[in-house]
Structure formats: C-alpha cells, structure tokens
Amino acid sequence: MIEDLHAEVVSGLPESEPVTMLNLIKFREASLDGNGSGWDAYQRYVEAAVEGLKKRGAKIMWAGQIKGVSLGPAEFGDWDFAALVWYPTPDSFLEMMQSLEYEDANVHRTNGCECHVILVNQTMFSRFT
Image 1: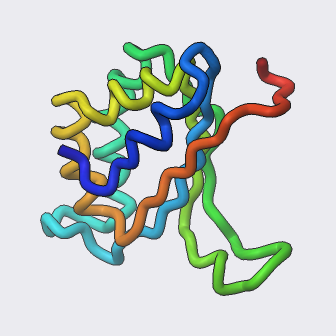
Image 2 (image 1 turned 90 degrees about the vertical axis):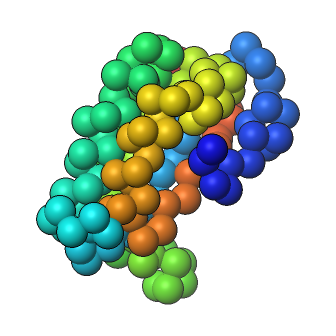
Image 3 (image 1 turned 60 degrees about the vertical axis):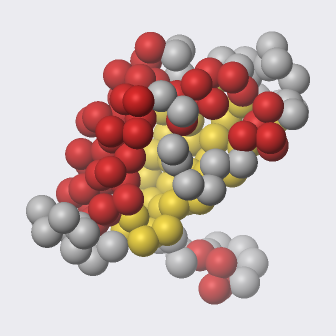
C-alpha cells in the first residue's frame, strides 16, 4: 500500500478525461539502501515503473532539474526535480499506484526521495490534447 495516496481526490475527477500529474521531488543525499545517491535510487524507480506507465497508456511529457524560484517565495523552490506525467484517465493513475508492480518499484522511490509530492491537474487547456 502506498502511503499518502489521496485516491478520493483523483477519483473525484471526470472519469473519461485525462489527467496530468506534476511530480515535485527532493532527493536524499544517499539512498537509504546504501546503493548510491538518492538520484541513483530514483533512476532505479523510474526503470522499474516505466513499463507500468506504458501498460496504462501513460506518458512522461517532460522531466528536468529545478534550478530555483523565478517568481514567488524562494522557500517554495526547494525541489531538485520535476516531472509531468500524463494519464488517459484518473482511474489509470490509481490503477498504477495500487498495482503490485508499482509497490515493488516504490521501494526505490522511498530510498531515493526525501520528499515527493504529486499534484493532480485537470486539463483546462493544452496544446497536446
């Protein structure tokens, strides 16, 4: 079971519309399992999770390093990495998060991430849809 999953927020969105997840990540200096850095552990997580994404029709739209706050309070920019992941429906995200394959991959995410927040976004405009 994935801790802190707020399934009620996601399941409250329109069933037939896609959702985009904004991932904000702060890495640990060293992986909790002693196998490299937090970034190294996160890479193992991505490798383990990507097949589950594909199986559910999800796509990583963008991912990159955060360099700082360009507008707003500077203390809100204490993240190392961000990613936008598109899912065809809210249920496809929940199915992924509650699958055994994700539970296995999540060990690496936990080992590598000091903090990982996923914000669900309902599309209002996109040049991609």
